[in-house]
Image 1 (cartoon, rainbow, N blue to C red):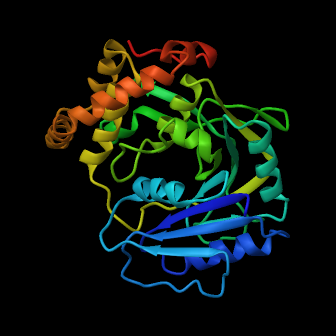
Image 2: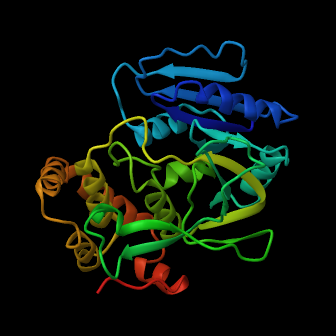
Length: 311
């Protein structure tokens, strides 16, 4: 049996999934991995036949990035998972063995790597646009940007590097993170989220509140193509829904409501609220489940990382 499954969802990525997989193969001197490539209903059909460790799944209808990631985690038959996007580049820095070693040593930790910014003219990891070391958590912006209201609360924000080979971070970020499958299942992974958005806060907050940690390994650097626009659309209502869902399942009522109150009360908010009402039984069941596994509160998390509470 292999040790680790790499989960790679994609939609309308043209040749990038091939290039990402080629980069994985060219930087690994071991075949301790499987790859699950989940095509979320792209017009172009892919053939990964020349890559023996790739399982290709093609959705007939669009499920969304996070649903695809969850699907991959459920299908995987290895003890360790590694979640990536389909526009990544890897270094020959023994990243696979290091990741497996970290997960084996700390099975309740979500492990993140350094994210190397690529794109805007080059995918050469040696000609990058900067390096990013995990994220801080923003619950509510001091002054909400009216042009990006859904991105100014309950959001990860890139943080500065700190000394050390590995250390704790408030939030994973960069589509470059690993979990043991057992821990991913214990915190229920990405179940409940719609489409895309807020996945890193969701996974990170649940990890900490369930008694785990989020850490970065600074000697692993993975390139990630940054772009102005994704090659697919995401409904703003889904972005709002995910934030409201997190508030209603993970947080005390008063804490969560303060964040919800920061979202603009427009048609997208109304759509999100309607979906919340449709799923109220699932949301209540999820809230009870998390209450049963959490060993610390959101207030403990904020105190640990000196994060401002919503006022």
